[in-house]
View (cartoon, rainbow, N blue to C red):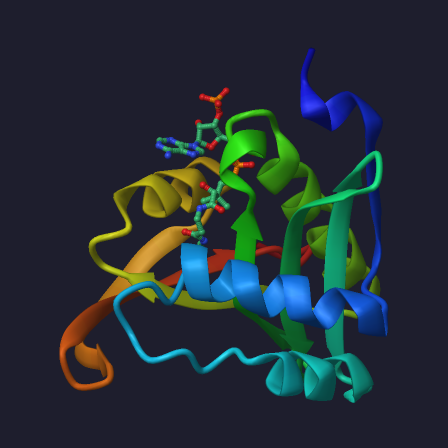
Length: 157
Ligand SMILES: CC(C)(COP(=O)(O)OP(=O)(O)OC[C@H]1O[C@@H](n2cnc3c(N)ncnc32)[C@H](O)[C@@H]1OP(=O)(O)O)[C@@H](O)C(=O)NCCC(=O)NCCS
């Protein structure tokens, strides 16, 4: 049975900050210094221009996303799905939810950076309509290259 069948998407609560930070360290920042600490995630929860989204399968945190909204651009800062929930549509559903929110907010494009070596996530974003725009050597602590990706979502694109 696919975990996505019972998935609930909702904004994060303060109790989610520690599990989100732990997932970020293990799934996104592995091998790099831990920057997405519980305190930093908690600050994002309090920022009016930022959405912290969670996906739950029953009582478990299956995934999360942090997206910051500008006037016309949104930046997807953090995005992850628990390993045992991956390839079941959880990431796609969170991204659809965020895209709907961004469209409602008048956003024209969504931007993100990710590790060049993260081929699985690059394929995921390509599949969701993102395009790779530029490589940024040394983006991560001066040692690791990032790939910047962009998806135009505005009505005129
Ligand atoms: C990238 C990630 C968020 C994808 O989440 P997910 O819930 O597994 O993705 P979905 O199940 O919605 O995948 C949708 C489609 O994207 C593509 N896709 C997803 N993961 C993929 C992978 N590892 N390799 C190739 N294609 C992939 C597939 O086309 C997939 O459809 P399919 O399973 O029917 O073939 C997840 O792998 C993850 O959390 N990785 C670790 C953290 C990370 O890298 N975050 C992104 C950088 S911040």
